[in-house]
Image (cartoon, rainbow, N blue to C red; front, side, top):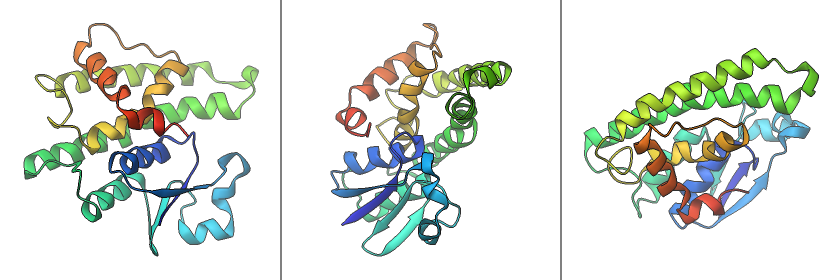
Length: 202
């Protein structure tokens, strides 16, 4: 049985939940409560020495980092496929995953740090506003990447899964997707309609 060590509100945890659900894999959810700093407990640090979620245990093989986990799942459980067959397509997936992990998602984390861990009167609105502006800039690239395609790599893939956990946060933090981004808005609607989107919420 696959064990996923996760926290429901973690975008990277949800990223792995979506991949597991899309592949039809049974897995046990093991809650690591970030609000109680359980990710820093000695027992969990034996699983992930960086003290972050998610981590995955597949019949004794333990690994961490959501992008690495999802690529492992693709290698170990290749059907249904979540990666293109050609090298160019696979590289495109990895480029978009990197864009999400290092340029898109971190700005959400900045906002979360302000709104989740600080009383309202102590939140830095400049930090929040800057993060929102940077997120909105990312839509320019995503719009171009989607030109002529339904999904980032042509067919549904790990690249699309990488972005899905952030969609609820766009609404929660009132970050608009400008109507001019027609490709992005249609792509988001397609992804939110997938059963894995709702099933991965917790």
